[in-house]
Image (cartoon, rainbow, N blue to C red; front, side, top):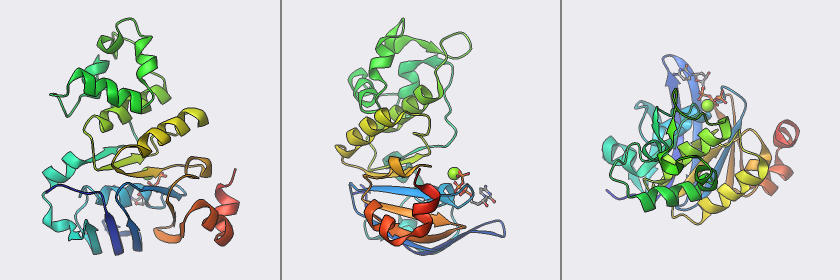
Length: 238
Ligand code: DCP
Ligand code: MG
């Protein structure tokens, strides 16, 4: 089934083994929106996001994608349309091009370049000795943390996802590059979930979900949270 990119959680709770991780989480993301996730380490951000492509199965409550319960989607077709950039980036020894096209080996060169441009890594790639054919890894060039993050975002974008999940994938970017990246994502027809440690990364999000020990303690726009949540103001505004 083709996704439109709408995601709705209704009183979702989730356990890892016997350990409660998410408790009664409800939110509604419209297609094309940017949803920020904020919360201290261990708050449950990654766990929540991993439920969307069905990387974890057992939750209570309901998750809907475009009004269909998530259980009706087969995981293969879901993961084709949902790109998740994990917290730990995995690049392999091989060309820049093959690293971007990983998982979509039939991607055309023009699509690889387009994704790299959107991920704000194209101009850097052009400065490499062999451009997109430059080899990464042991015998090749090494990327910085922020360059690796942008390469893995390009890898996610080349699949033209309906839902893009950036799990702390912009932490190594300077504020200016991050802003350009987020602006370019807004022009895509996809729903974006972005975990960040700083409010500044999420100011433009349609909604911010503030998690604390597995509970959604506040949700709303940046302005709404500034007004309504002392925790938001005190902990994350810096
Ligand atoms: N947890 C677990 N087993 C796993 C993954 C997580 O028991 N395989 C636990 C550890 C935390 C809780 O679940 O107590 C939430 O973990 P998350 O990874 O979802 O937390 P965050 O992504 O919010 O944390 P961080 O900011 O460190 O990435
Ligand atoms: Mg995490």
